[in-house]
Length: 160
Image (cartoon, rainbow, N blue to C red):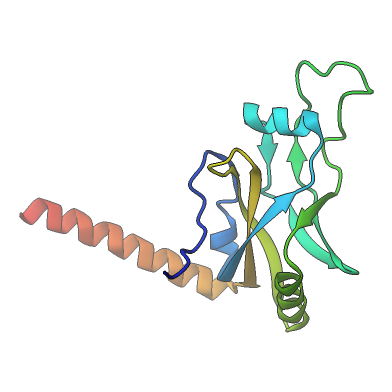
């Protein structure tokens, strides 16, 4: 039996909605995160933002930089709380990491986080997109296509 592709089916905590506007997403990879206990509890409360974050390969490791996971409300003491904007290590297989390194090495490619979610087992996962930046004309073309599709659906709804 063929293996099914992994897709985020659990509860979405944070989504980078502007990523598809600013980049052409060519491929996606699911990665795990190394989190502290208070970070997981904050994610369950929905206190996260990945809009300005990005992933980078340093040595033989993949890191998530500039992501925000808010402080957990009941971890009041400094000993139990975490830094909201710290670098977080991402967990991927070695062959996926080498594929990422190869694609980043090409011109204009970057790794952008798309969704932060909990999978069916309750584990926090991050959907990463291997992306190439859009030019302003590409963004306008995408917007024209979206507007035309919306107008076409409106016309079809009115006629029948």
